Length: 162
Image (cartoon, rainbow, N blue to C red; front, side, top):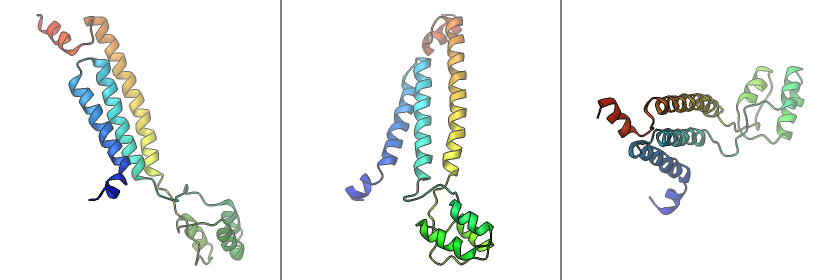
C-alpha cells in the first residue's frame, strides 16, 4: 500500500483516531462526566464512519427533477426525455423508473444518487445519542447528590463502607 492509497482513506483514519480517543477516555478516566464525553466522542466517530460510507462522488439527492416528473405525468415522452437531457443528469435511478413507467426511452439519461439511508439512520442515532447523554448526565447529577463525588473509585470505596 503506497502513500497515495493511505492518504486517500483519510476519513477512515479520522474515524479510527476519534474512536480510539473516545475509547481511551472511557477506560482511562475515573470521572463520570469525562466518561460520558468519551462515549460521545466514540459515538461521533461511528456517525462519521456511516456518513462517509454513504457519500457518492457527484451524487445528488434521490429526487426526480420537476421537469421530468411533470412531463412524464402528462405523458409527454419527448418532453420528459428532453428535460432529462437538459438537466445534465448523471446516473439511472428513480428517474429511469418513472421514464420507463411512462413508456419513455432513456438512452443517455443517467443520474447518480447518493444513498440517503446512512444519513437518515445517523439522524436517528444522533437523537438517541442526545437522549442517552441527557440520561447519563442526569444519573451523574443524582450520583453526585447521593455520594458527593463523581469519581468512580471514591464511589466504590463509599459503597464498600471503607
